[in-house]
Image 1 (cartoon, helix red, strand yellow):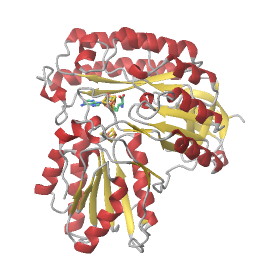
Image 2 (image 1 turned 90 degrees about the vertical axis):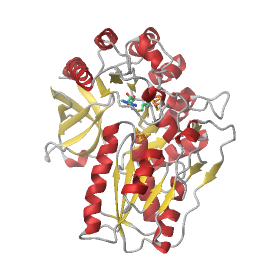
Image 3 (image 1 turned 135 degrees about the vertical axis):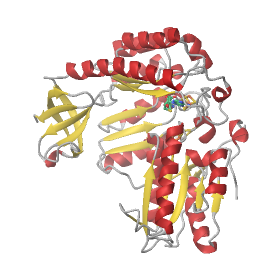
Length: 470
Ligand code: SAH
Ligand code: SF4
Ligand code: F3S
């Protein structure tokens, strides 16, 4: 058993990262067995789940939508806020019931960021005895061995490393979409924003080699993929750990030059966002004009306490330069309210900045203290009631601007990558515009997988309606 240690996880070791190839398991121990994976959290976790599915299927497991009759259920978890925890523990309760009644042999496992937390693993050891295995984020490539050992010995397996592992290439993946693919470019995060648990759960910043990334994109293009999204907790730090003269601007250029039809990237930290990157986004038609640029707070005092390392003036300068240079850009953001020390004036500064930036959309959160992070040790000064009130007031402003941004598109023609049948109306299809707006489209199913022109007929709060043109 290897348990996590959050103090160790804070350290950054000076050793070189190894780049290795995935070492599969030949034995088909999943033959005639079914699996179910539930994913929480960010896009990196969604892509990790695609790897979990890929590894499981490589030894014979088959996917299932039904939990009750599955042989193995894996929860790929997120630790970013307390409510992410609550959801997972709630679902574990459901699984316990299934194990106690209809399916006592079902194997239950936990992966992802919660697996990296000391408090969580201790709680699982004490109270959740029916969890069969816990596999951390740094050794995900070892998942199959853990499952195999559990099956062979019937002993529960806990293996969580508190320092980052190697960069493992060629882990098999089963991708959710046939048209749009996630591509990891950098793992981990070294920014240590004081509220954030990610640097502890995902370890040191580690870039993939540029040729591995570009080859993956070329391969996806050959397979018919229209879009790739380059992934990292802070993609703008790409290359800093392994190259002296190659950065995200260079990588975006090389990926755009493969000719894949759409290139996206998430998430950008404003601190590392260079003019060169803005220029590359502006100059390539296939680099999509959509940028997620987390602000977190509009108060310089709070930004400093958060260790964000930019001022609101620097943020605005970057924001305006993107708006000026990138045609038809859409910019979204993340904002936290109720950080320790946030006064009404600080909060109003955030509202002022939102009023100035008029974002296309924003994800807004109430501060949630996370285990062992510096902000969790700061004295909380904002009551839950005030947090909720600020969140509510912020959302009103945010929604006003996202509605306006949507309204501006009414009557225009937008290029959409059609990906699915619409969830709202089974007779329609749906897809995303270049600047990442969801459109429900009147048009035939045969459009799925294509990039087509769509006339926007109506703007709703969180989506657009449109009709197929050509
Ligand atoms: N790497 C990304 C963010 C990843 S987490 C970045 O740096 O922008 C996504 C968002 O969750 C963050 O941008 C932040 O707004 C929010 N968040 C992170 N930790 C939080 C916490 N402890 N409480 C509330 N919100 C949090
Ligand atoms: Fe967390 Fe900050 Fe890293 Fe984003 S940049 S993952 S908010 S520490
Ligand atoms: Fe959550 Fe981990 Fe992503 S904490 S947001 S799943 S990196």
